[in-house]
Amino acid sequence: MEEHHCCIYSKMLSKCTFGSFLIISSIFLTVCRRVVYVLYRCGKPFPKGPSPSSFTTLIVLGSGGHTAEMLSLVSVMRMDRYTPRFYIAAATDNMSLHKARSFEHSLPHKPAVKEASLRFTQIYRSREVGQSYVTSVWTTILAIFHALWLMIRIRPQVILCNGPGTCIPLCVIAFLFKVLGIRWSSIFYVESVARVKKLSLSGLLLYKLRIADHFFVQWSHLQKNYPRAHYVGCLM
Image (cartoon, helix red, strand yellow):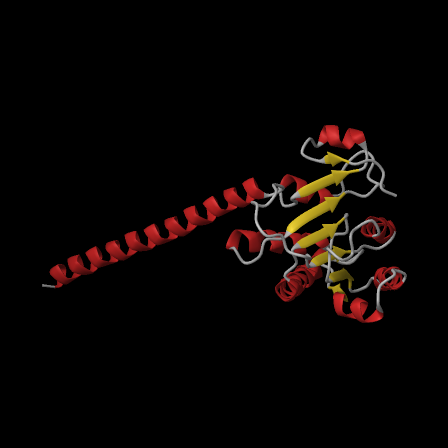
């Protein structure tokens, strides 16, 4: 009798295991197909249809020359098309947001329009310069959750970045949002003019993982080494 019950239990367990395997396999294949579709669609124009009047734009700033280069790029954009604009810098970088505010205040727009279409915020760094790798594990986890919260709140349609490490978690989350069908964000990465011979670590990650929709370099021989990049010349 006991052997009969054990046999029935074994058959039920086998069926449950097989069913779980089928469910997991289906989910895995669905995710893989979605990733392939996203990689195929990245960088391609959207199908014909009504175009939105404006795009929620996320602009990632970095310390040093990164912010100067980014603001130079933003200055030639159609401000009425790329609005509202969200400027993000590292939590320890106070100068970048100050420069962004000064830049926006210098533009000829009505004060009421400016306040309604601009946001300036900070994001936690994954790792500070000189920080130990042991403690950086916790700060990285905190930075990822903070980046996730910001992306859910902002839900950008366009992301502009040019090298600071703070753009990596934001771009990765934007890519995951595409895969999950939450939000489609077009990521534009412009490698810094200071990168003459090779890409920055941020640029290399976004290029190799094919996360950026459009990847631009400012030196012609970089384009030869990274053929999927677009050479645009010096933008400064």
